[in-house]
Length: 76
View 1 (cartoon, helix red, strand yellow):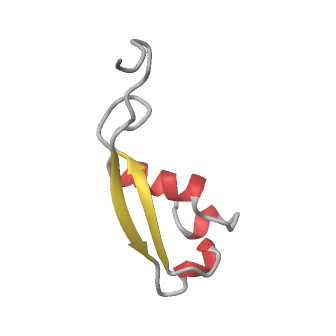
View 2: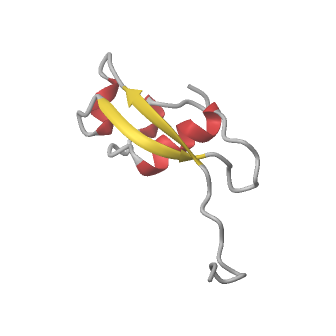
View 3: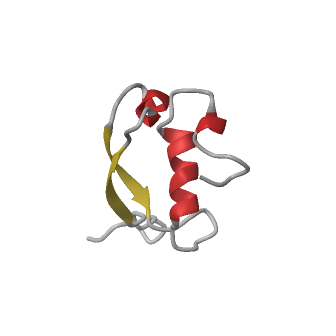
């Protein structure tokens, strides 16, 4: 017997390894290396891009509140 008809398919992800250096790791709890699974699609169903990755890093991985040291006016 298969899954229920209303069961959502798992969203595809993109496995990534991220490395911060040059002092940037300070914003990420002094960890230089991170492995994460980025959703392949953004909330609108569009393919993930660098902007989506940067926002994902800020929202889910950055421990420091000083986002302006990582992005400026939503740009790197």
